[in-house]
Structure formats: structure tokens, C-alpha cells
Image 1: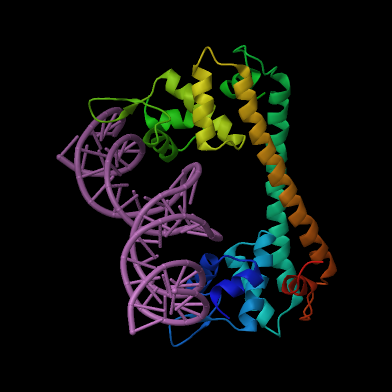
Image 2: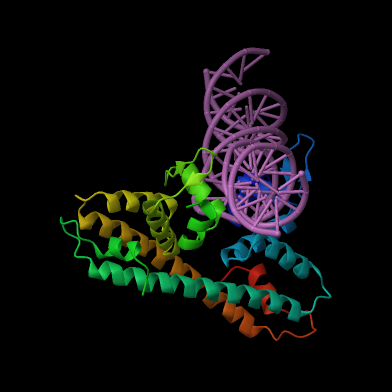
Length: 130
Length: 130
DNA sequence: GATAAGGCTTCCAGTGACGGGAAGGTCAAG
DNA sequence: CTTGACCTTCCCGTCACTGGAAGCCTTATC
């Protein structure tokens, strides 16, 4: 199948698939006309990558996950360790965002939001947080 | 004051401050030797930007916030609207991350993580989410 | 057979917000 | 006078794509 079909089936834009080939994540065959030709295994790989990306794994993590996926002698502990590291990053990002949300929603709550210029949000940004 | 001192006081690396000048957020004076010379107002602006960045505002948001900060005839409603849009983005990012966390922690919980190759994490990535 | 539309190719440039590092000028201390 | 710590500009790299240009290939229609 051609790039746009595999893209539609894997839920990825053609541009992204070309990029994944460029960085060596996939290796589609080429037809005599120079077109990429994708087999079912390529489609599966792309869908795998798409789902891993959807869970926030980096491209390099995806590369490692693919390698583990194709290594029939892998230890599930290796996969779990990778996923747990990623979970920690997610948790860190979550708490960072929650802290931002806390501070900013306090500021927004203190701002009456009318035509007057007085604004606790700007004052809060102008002076160090307590 | 020179760039490294203002950087230390505002909590920003010199590189970042040069970048902020390049994109027109600040306009420090120059000495005869070509060195940037920062006044107190520059320091305040940089600290303001640093705090806004710490709350996750984009550079363009910071530019708008700075303009509002310096506009004594601003309406606090404009500031509040900007902050509320940003709060919505934070909330969207939070729910996206929580969804990832949910799915991934389920997968991690199902993986025994030993030396055997069977791995629900890889299986979950290989087949469509239910 | 000509043509037009659409799909495919490569290549180059841009995104956001910096960070690293090179090459070279300046300043303060010893 | 030298050393080392600053400062300057400039250019490249990050991450994961995305947009667009220029040109070839395929398919359908006239």
C-alpha cells in the first residue's frame, strides 16, 4: 500500500511517516517508480508507534519499545522500567502544571476583570511570589 | 548592571536575556564597550517575564502581559481574559496527561516485570485501545 | 494522444524557547 | 604584562514534526 493509505490506516500523516523513515524507525520497500511500498508489518509498526506517541513516549523511547517488541527474548522488566520512567515524567509534569494552575487560578480569582486598570494578576507577576 | 548580574537577580541565564533582547522583549542600553547595561526597570521587566514564564505563559503572552503592565489605562478584563485562556490550556494539558497516566499505569500494573518476555505493555501498544 | 487532477518524491525552511560552543574583544587583579 | 573572568556576535542543535516548492508518476477524461 502507498503512503497515504497506510497513513489513513495508522492514523498518521504522510509527512510523519516519511520522517519516521528518515530517522530509521521504519524501512518500507520501494517500488520501481520510487514510491514507498508498505506491508502489513509496516502498518503494525506505525500503529504501534502512534499509540506509544499518544501515551507521550518520546521518539527515542518508541525506538527502544519497538526494539523490545521485536525482541522475542526480551525481559518484560525492561519494558516495565521504561514505562515507569515515563510515568515518573508524566507525574512530574502533572505536579508542575497543577502548581501553575493553583497560583494562576488564585490570581484570576482575585481579579475583578472590569474596565479598571487595577489588576492583581499583573501585581502578582510584578512582585515575588510569597 | 551587566548581564550576569541582572541574570542572577532575575533568576535567568544570560543566554535567555540576550534572546529576550533579540526578540524585542527588552531594550537594554549599551555602554561604550558594547556591553549591555541594565537598569532597575530592565531588571523588573525580566523578573516579570521570568515569573510569567514560570506560570507557563508563552513568550507572546509575556509580550502582551508586559504591554498591559505598562499600559496604565489597561482594563483588568483584558489581563483576566488572557490568564483565563491560559488556564484553559493548562486544564486541557492536565486532562491529556491524566489520560496518559491512567492508561499507562494500568498497563504497568498489569506487567509483572520479570525476566519473561510476555508483556501487557507491549501488547497494549500493539493492539488498538478498547 | 493530450491533458488535467491528484499522489508521490526530494529538499529546504520554520516552529518555540532557548542552550552549547567557537572566536574574539574587555576588564580587574596580581 | 599576563591571567582569568567577563562580555560580544554568530552559528548550529534541540524535538517532532509541518508547510511549501519543484518536479515526476499515475489515473481518468476528452
